[in-house]
Structures are given as C-alpha cells and as structure tokens.
Image 1 (cartoon, helix red, strand yellow):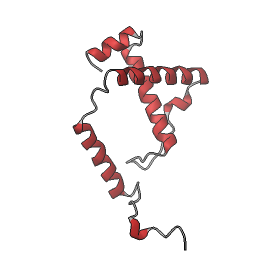
Image 2: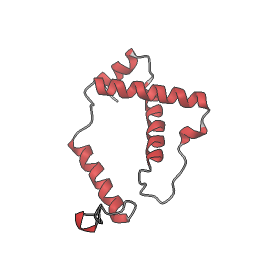
Image 3: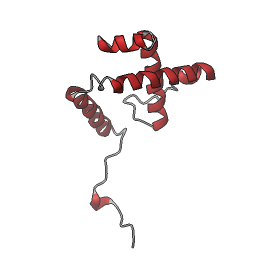
Image 4: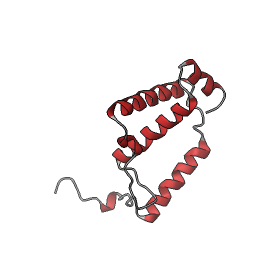
Length: 113
C-alpha cells in the first residue's frame, strides 16, 4: 500500500505491517473455507486457525477495517492487468484439473423428465 492508502491507515491508527498481515491471514482463511483451488496439490490449513480466538477476532476486525478503507479509497490497484492475471490463474486451474470444466447446456440433464 502506498501514498494515500498509507495515510488512510495512519488516520485509522493501523500500522501498515499489521494491516498487511491481517489481510493476508483472512484472505487465506476465506479462500480455504470457500474451497478455492490451489495450483499445488497440498492444502495447508491457514495460519489464522493456529492463533487464539482473541487473536483471530483482532485479525478479522482489522481486515474488515482495511477493506472498508480500501473501498472508501475507490478500490485502488484493481485494474485490467490484475484481472488478466486472475483469468490466467483460473485457466491454469481448469487445464490442470483443479477446477472441472463448466458443463454447457448440452451436458446438463433436463430438470423435468
């Protein structure tokens, strides 16, 4: 996070390193809980779950504050290059077999016989 984002974090009394760590921990946990695909075959338990309940609450609260600040700033760093990278990751997961191919209408059985 740079420039105005650092100023927003400072005004909310959130250290940049703590904001980054909490966002990373929560993102890993959310992706794991949602069953997001991993390019590696091993699915490690997110580090968030190794923390105490109190520390987990603090991390979730701080990540929520950071997310709110990011939205208020107009969602910086969300651009076409990052969408392209996400699309490439998705295609790689489909090709590797981590995500099954989406069935088209011809492969889906009818709802009513």
